[in-house]
Image (cartoon, rainbow, N blue to C red; front, side):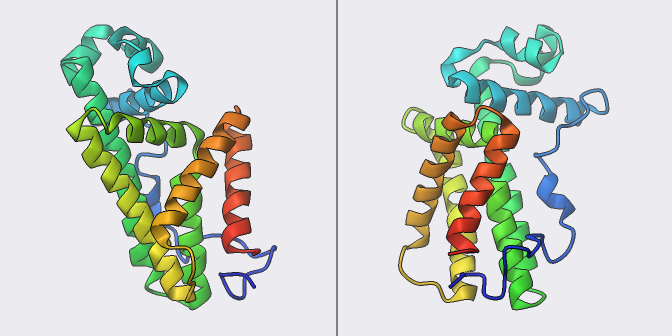
Amino acid sequence: MAVASGLTQSSPLAPARPLRAWHRGTVTANKSTTRGGARAYTLEKVWELIADGGVGAFSMRDVATTAGVSLGTVTHHFGSRERLVDEAFAALAERYSTIGHVAITSSRSGSHNEACNTLIYALHHLWGERAITLAAAELRTHAARSAAARECAESVTEICRLVVAELHRITDRTGTPPSQVVDLLDTAAVRLAVRHQSPDNFRVAIRRHVNNVYVYA
Protein backbone atom coordinates (compact mmCIF):
# COMPACT_ATOMS: atom_id res chain seq x y z
CA MET A 1 0.00 0.00 0.00
CA ALA A 2 1.35 3.41 -0.89
CA VAL A 3 2.18 5.74 1.96
CA ALA A 4 0.56 8.60 0.14
CA SER A 5 -2.88 7.02 0.10
CA GLY A 6 -4.83 7.74 -3.05
CA LEU A 7 -1.82 8.59 -5.17
CA THR A 8 -1.28 6.62 -8.33
CA GLN A 9 1.61 6.44 -10.78
CA SER A 10 -0.17 9.05 -12.88
CA SER A 11 -0.68 11.47 -10.00
CA PRO A 12 1.23 14.73 -10.48
CA LEU A 13 3.59 15.09 -7.56
CA ALA A 14 3.20 18.82 -7.20
CA PRO A 15 2.71 20.95 -4.10
CA ALA A 16 -0.77 22.01 -3.04
CA ARG A 17 -0.03 25.54 -4.26
CA PRO A 18 2.89 27.33 -5.94
CA LEU A 19 5.77 27.64 -3.48
CA ARG A 20 8.06 30.25 -4.92
CA ALA A 21 10.16 30.37 -1.77
CA TRP A 22 11.27 26.78 -2.41
CA HIS A 23 13.41 28.02 -5.23
CA ARG A 24 15.36 30.44 -3.08
CA GLY A 25 18.91 29.19 -3.34
CA THR A 26 18.06 26.64 -6.02
CA VAL A 27 17.69 28.82 -9.09
CA THR A 28 20.95 30.25 -10.34
CA ALA A 29 21.10 33.95 -9.68
CA ASN A 30 21.99 36.39 -12.42
CA LYS A 31 25.36 37.53 -11.17
CA SER A 32 25.04 40.88 -12.90
CA THR A 33 21.76 41.85 -11.25
CA THR A 34 22.62 42.83 -7.68
CA ARG A 35 25.45 42.59 -5.23
CA GLY A 36 23.40 40.06 -3.24
CA GLY A 37 22.72 38.10 -6.41
CA ALA A 38 26.42 38.01 -7.24
CA ARG A 39 27.24 36.75 -3.75
CA ALA A 40 24.57 34.03 -3.91
CA TYR A 41 25.71 33.00 -7.39
CA THR A 42 29.31 32.71 -6.18
CA LEU A 43 28.27 30.54 -3.24
CA GLU A 44 26.34 28.24 -5.57
CA LYS A 45 29.51 27.86 -7.63
CA VAL A 46 31.38 26.96 -4.45
CA TRP A 47 28.83 24.17 -3.88
CA GLU A 48 29.69 22.84 -7.33
CA LEU A 49 33.43 22.96 -6.63
CA ILE A 50 32.95 21.20 -3.30
CA ALA A 51 30.82 18.56 -5.04
CA ASP A 52 33.48 18.03 -7.70
CA GLY A 53 36.51 17.62 -5.48
CA GLY A 54 35.80 18.31 -1.83
CA VAL A 55 36.51 21.26 0.44
CA GLY A 56 40.27 21.15 -0.07
CA ALA A 57 40.35 20.81 -3.85
CA PHE A 58 39.90 24.42 -4.99
CA SER A 59 41.40 27.85 -4.49
CA MET A 60 39.93 31.33 -4.32
CA ARG A 61 41.12 31.78 -7.90
CA ASP A 62 39.21 28.66 -8.94
CA VAL A 63 36.08 30.16 -7.38
CA ALA A 64 36.60 33.43 -9.25
CA THR A 65 37.09 31.62 -12.55
CA THR A 66 34.05 29.39 -12.07
CA ALA A 67 31.84 32.31 -11.03
CA GLY A 68 33.13 34.52 -13.84
CA VAL A 69 34.33 37.30 -11.54
CA SER A 70 37.72 38.66 -10.57
CA LEU A 71 39.81 37.25 -7.74
CA GLY A 72 39.62 40.69 -6.13
CA THR A 73 35.82 40.51 -6.10
CA VAL A 74 35.84 37.14 -4.34
CA THR A 75 38.41 38.36 -1.82
CA HIS A 76 36.43 41.55 -1.22
CA HIS A 77 33.19 39.68 -0.54
CA PHE A 78 34.58 36.81 1.54
CA GLY A 79 38.01 37.83 2.81
CA SER A 80 39.49 34.37 3.19
CA ARG A 81 39.04 30.89 1.82
CA GLU A 82 37.95 29.60 5.25
CA ARG A 83 35.22 32.23 5.48
CA LEU A 84 34.13 31.47 1.92
CA VAL A 85 33.69 27.77 2.75
CA ASP A 86 31.84 28.60 5.98
CA GLU A 87 29.46 30.93 4.14
CA ALA A 88 28.90 28.37 1.38
CA PHE A 89 27.91 25.77 3.95
CA ALA A 90 25.71 28.29 5.79
CA ALA A 91 23.93 29.13 2.52
CA LEU A 92 23.49 25.42 1.84
CA ALA A 93 21.90 24.93 5.24
CA GLU A 94 19.63 27.91 4.62
CA ARG A 95 18.49 26.37 1.33
CA TYR A 96 17.48 23.17 3.10
CA SER A 97 15.78 25.11 5.88
CA THR A 98 13.73 27.20 3.45
CA ILE A 99 12.50 24.19 1.50
CA GLY A 100 11.68 22.22 4.64
CA HIS A 101 9.87 24.90 6.60
CA VAL A 102 7.84 26.13 3.63
CA ALA A 103 6.83 22.55 2.81
CA ILE A 104 5.78 21.72 6.37
CA THR A 105 3.78 24.92 6.71
CA SER A 106 2.09 24.43 3.33
CA SER A 107 1.27 20.79 4.05
CA ARG A 108 -0.90 21.82 6.98
CA SER A 109 -3.56 23.30 4.72
CA GLY A 110 -5.48 21.59 1.96
CA SER A 111 -6.49 17.96 1.65
CA HIS A 112 -4.67 14.92 2.97
CA ASN A 113 -3.43 13.98 -0.50
CA GLU A 114 -2.28 17.55 -1.17
CA ALA A 115 -0.30 17.46 2.07
CA CYS A 116 1.31 14.15 1.06
CA ASN A 117 2.14 15.49 -2.39
CA THR A 118 3.66 18.63 -0.94
CA LEU A 119 5.93 16.74 1.44
CA ILE A 120 7.02 14.20 -1.18
CA TYR A 121 7.70 17.09 -3.54
CA ALA A 122 9.85 18.58 -0.78
CA LEU A 123 11.84 15.34 -0.57
CA HIS A 124 12.44 15.61 -4.32
CA HIS A 125 13.94 19.06 -3.75
CA LEU A 126 15.89 18.20 -0.61
CA TRP A 127 17.69 15.32 -2.32
CA GLY A 128 17.11 16.13 -5.98
CA GLU A 129 20.15 18.16 -7.06
CA ARG A 130 23.39 16.28 -7.68
CA ALA A 131 25.86 19.04 -6.79
CA ILE A 132 23.95 19.93 -3.64
CA THR A 133 23.73 16.27 -2.58
CA LEU A 134 27.50 15.87 -2.92
CA ALA A 135 28.19 19.22 -1.23
CA ALA A 136 25.97 18.17 1.68
CA ALA A 137 27.88 14.89 1.95
CA GLU A 138 31.13 16.83 2.10
CA LEU A 139 29.58 19.10 4.72
CA ARG A 140 28.90 16.07 6.93
CA THR A 141 32.52 14.99 6.53
CA HIS A 142 33.87 18.49 7.20
CA ALA A 143 31.70 18.78 10.33
CA ALA A 144 34.28 16.74 12.25
CA ARG A 145 36.87 19.49 11.66
CA SER A 146 34.85 22.68 11.95
CA ALA A 147 32.34 23.89 14.52
CA ALA A 148 30.62 26.06 11.90
CA ALA A 149 30.29 23.10 9.52
CA ARG A 150 29.02 20.89 12.33
CA GLU A 151 26.27 23.39 13.14
CA CYS A 152 25.26 23.56 9.46
CA ALA A 153 25.32 19.78 9.10
CA GLU A 154 23.12 19.35 12.16
CA SER A 155 20.69 21.95 10.78
CA VAL A 156 20.45 20.14 7.42
CA THR A 157 19.88 16.77 9.06
CA GLU A 158 17.25 18.17 11.41
CA ILE A 159 15.14 19.89 8.76
CA CYS A 160 15.23 16.75 6.61
CA ARG A 161 14.16 14.72 9.64
CA LEU A 162 11.29 17.13 10.34
CA VAL A 163 9.96 16.83 6.78
CA VAL A 164 10.11 13.04 6.90
CA ALA A 165 8.55 13.00 10.38
CA GLU A 166 5.68 15.21 9.17
CA LEU A 167 5.06 12.88 6.23
CA HIS A 168 5.07 9.89 8.56
CA ARG A 169 2.72 11.67 10.96
CA ILE A 170 0.03 12.49 8.42
CA THR A 171 0.22 9.02 6.83
CA ASP A 172 0.40 7.10 10.13
CA ARG A 173 3.58 5.44 8.93
CA THR A 174 5.38 3.39 11.54
CA GLY A 175 8.51 1.30 11.44
CA THR A 176 11.69 2.99 10.27
CA PRO A 177 12.31 6.16 12.35
CA PRO A 178 12.58 9.45 10.41
CA SER A 179 16.23 9.91 11.41
CA GLN A 180 17.07 6.51 9.92
CA VAL A 181 15.11 7.34 6.75
CA VAL A 182 17.20 10.50 6.36
CA ASP A 183 20.40 8.46 6.68
CA LEU A 184 19.12 5.97 4.10
CA LEU A 185 18.13 8.74 1.66
CA ASP A 186 21.52 10.42 2.12
CA THR A 187 23.29 7.15 1.34
CA ALA A 188 21.09 6.41 -1.67
CA ALA A 189 21.53 9.95 -3.03
CA VAL A 190 25.33 9.79 -2.84
CA ARG A 191 25.34 6.36 -4.47
CA LEU A 192 23.14 7.63 -7.31
CA ALA A 193 25.26 10.78 -7.67
CA VAL A 194 28.34 8.63 -8.23
CA ARG A 195 26.48 6.49 -10.74
CA HIS A 196 24.84 9.35 -12.64
CA GLN A 197 27.25 12.12 -13.65
CA SER A 198 24.49 13.98 -15.50
CA PRO A 199 22.48 16.23 -13.15
CA ASP A 200 19.31 15.49 -15.14
CA ASN A 201 19.82 11.73 -14.96
CA PHE A 202 20.55 11.98 -11.25
CA ARG A 203 17.41 14.02 -10.69
CA VAL A 204 15.28 11.40 -12.43
CA ALA A 205 16.94 8.56 -10.50
CA ILE A 206 16.62 10.07 -7.02
CA ARG A 207 13.02 11.11 -7.58
CA ARG A 208 12.23 7.59 -8.75
CA HIS A 209 13.89 6.29 -5.58
CA VAL A 210 11.83 8.60 -3.36
CA ASN A 211 8.64 7.65 -5.18
CA ASN A 212 9.39 3.95 -4.78
CA VAL A 213 9.72 4.48 -1.04
CA TYR A 214 6.75 6.78 -0.49
CA VAL A 215 4.35 6.55 -3.42
CA TYR A 216 4.38 3.16 -5.09
CA ALA A 217 5.42 0.99 -2.13
